[in-house]
Length: 247
Length: 169
Image (cartoon, rainbow over all chains, first blue to last red; front, top):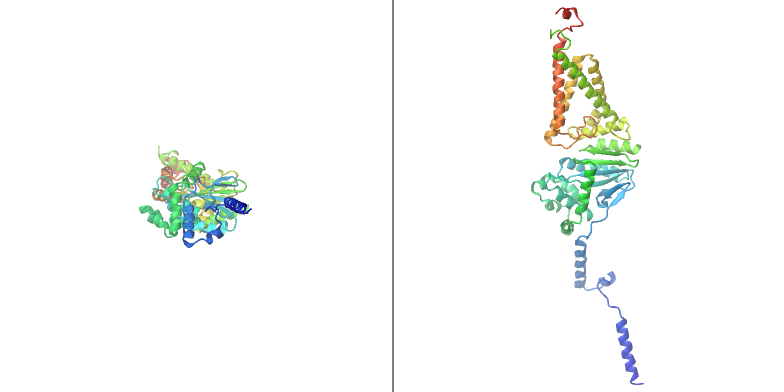
């Protein structure tokens, strides 16, 4: 009896030890992580940042709205349920695109996209004769995927003359992206995961007979399609959109 | 003989100019007003707004001015084309049409020189502005100028079929 008790105790302790789960890093809950030492927490945070910085393996999915295919949701303004859809094909080095984006499109976004009347789809259409258009489109697309698309598009258009002279696109973006954001954008551009989206936009433009930039293609719910080429003043854009909405 | 013939060179140019320019102007006005290239058709008001947007693309004038031009030019083109065809006050309308064609030529040359990648807007339908457009408008301008000069020259002469002095020559 005296000999048996230590043996059974030993067996019970051994069984209990084997049944205990081994806690891995992946299973660590946030509350547990919060209780970690400062060094361990820093290491975990650094690992998380590294995971976020690395680009996704495949290109993000596109959506289809009212028959308009291959829409990158990060490059849109407004609501998908809007009665009008406007695809805007632009090239970051085209002066008329700059004028359209910095004047008319800002007001259209404010008064028509943000009020649910027009769903704006920004399409990249880098022209071959422009040396840095494609690179600028890649950076703008990457910025859109980290939620900074609008700011980056604006700074690229506003400083068009500067960066097209020396190709310093990253330098231009540094005014609107902090170092962490710049690192994420760089990683996305270098991984080339978003390139198919830019190329798809260009191909869609070619299919839609776009050969000039900017070209705005306005689609109505009843299937009417109106391509509008070149810069358009807000006054006339407004009149046209109002007439389409009143139909 | 050539002077008294109703078909001398000047009169042939005048008739050619009247027919060609009137045809161009009437069709251009009609196309801008009714957009026969669009399916389904759009009301004239919308067609004129689309034309105003095409004028905008030349980046020469403000939106409100382009809207005003878009609402007046197509009707003016049809009216002047018809007047040229009818031949009433020919010197006046030949001069007016030449001034308008010269204006078109200037804006087309300017847009081409600036490298603007836009549609011409000449007949409302999407038609890229190319060197061909410049040559076409240039040819129309030459025709309009010749027609107008010859109209003034012919006006100084009496028509061989309408006056006694003409018949006696």
